[in-house]
Length: 481
Image (cartoon, rainbow, N blue to C red; front, side):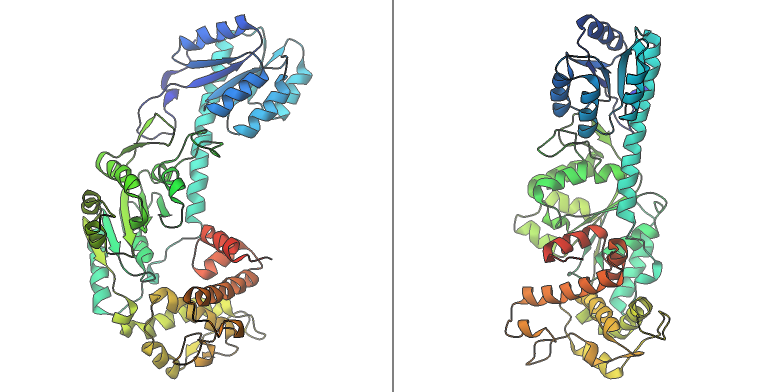
């Protein structure tokens, strides 16, 4: 009988071999002992439980690669236990034991999600075959889970080369650097104020790299609570902490052979920074709550709206990690320092949002919008604290409000000296920046959701954000369909 062999390699990554663990739930002690001896001889660990309840308790505490479950047991019968086990570990292959001739129970077990069944008394070679298939099934489930997570990350972030728009000398230098650096595996640190286009630069570095055909995984370190960020990066085993009901594959694993973009990397705690440093130095890590050492081949791109050198001096960022990240350093200029790009960007955004923003009779959903010269003068005079992202939001809103083919100053929502920037009456007495921005943000998100008929993926694309960010904003702003 041969059960283990190369099936201890779990997801195809280059990693250390670990022993598979099987949960055997049977009220017959001699049956459990025989199975444990047989599987133990093949290098497989076995945990025993005398009934369904005892097995349930073990399953809540530990991750298993397969389970063997008798149908007839006291306290909690096998079918009831199977339903409970499937809720806790839906990807766990459960093999049930049935008495000879009880086909009805076997059929019912298969309907409830059992992986397979064996009729007692069973042959150990038959058990070997079924266990091998169960392990392979578990491996496949892990790969599918990772692929689904990767697709979800990529779904709303497809990059087009023409998204980087500029004729300013400072940005032209950035474009040249992208061309020089992209083909290498060098770690790149991208610094710039919020809204300057750091993610677009990261997209371009990936797009023009040798890893373009491999995963491009992104994570915003500022958008995830500190208590969960480690799990998001490195994954976790089931039971690693309260609420960890199933194994989760982390972003580093998802990005194996590809590229990982760490946005707002400066928001990491110093403790997590040290773990990130270890991955950069050794290309290996462990999942939260796990003992398996996982090796990965990942190119790192990092971005921050802070100056990391200042963060190092202030003691908020590790000096050794800073030097690891800034092998190549790109500093993006704010929009107020590249005013010659404003007219070009307005034209780009009108082309992007004009057609999708049109819902007027006679347009057929297509409009070639242009900007009034006075509007361009007004835009050039504005300091743009939110940079290109703010300009994009302003133009997108203007395309929604415009009924003709020309957008004018009347369609803008920029503050003027002595006025409130076109905010609703309820906000005119308030100079609270957070409330003002939240009002504009709510308006844009509400309009996008209505235009997309509350299809979150379409609305997220209209807004230029990913679905997770949109869900968070819907919850934060308490928007309802």
